[in-house]
Image (tube, rainbow, N blue to C red; front, side, top):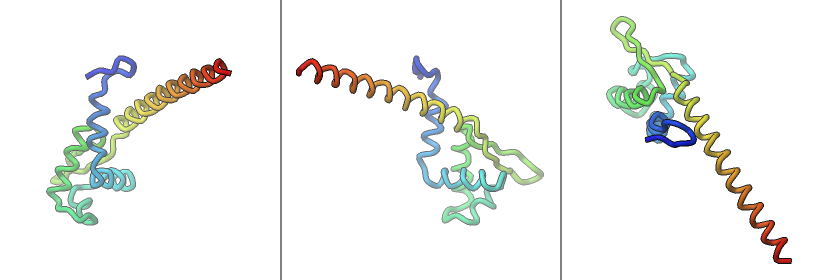
Length: 117
């Protein structure tokens, strides 16, 4: 899928899907706070199992929001901000587009009101 004005939107779609789940948002916040952590460490403070954390991390990894690197027997996860930054830019462009549309509607309405007098 491509949006003519903003380019490819698949990465944005996967980021939005990943961020739709509150547990994944919490994991992202924890990783941003800690720098890096294992699934086991992350699961310690959550009401979900380590296996559930691993599945959530896989979704975040697929969306490009985190990456996992093996250190010995552990896999340590860290935040990758590029996908989130790209999504933020897309949202900013979308908001600007809507602002332009609303300003145009306001201008047309004000002209119509002036013309009716």
